[in-house]
Length: 89
Image 1: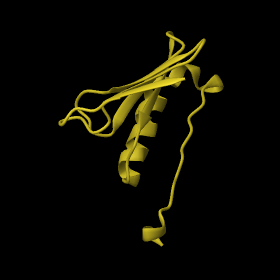
Image 2: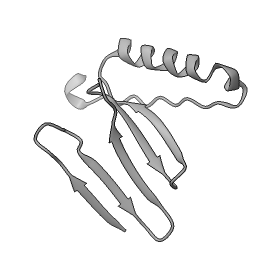
Image 3: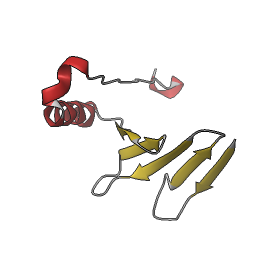
C-alpha cells in the first residue's frame, strides 16, 4: 500500500491517496468550506464528510444530506462519530 500525502500551505488536509492492488482512495477538499470533504473510492463511489467540533455544523450537515437524498431515505445510511479528547474531560 502506498500513501501519497501532498500538503500545501493553504490547505490543511491536502490530498491523500491510498493505492492498493484493487483500490484507490482520494480525499478532496470541498469549496466554500474548511470542514467538508469528499472521499472517493473504487472510482465510482464517494462519501460526503464533515469534520467539526461544532454540534450546530454537524446538525446542519445531517439536515442538508437528508434533504439532498430525501427520495431514497428508506435505504440510506448516515453515520456520526464523536470523539472526546482527554483535554475535554
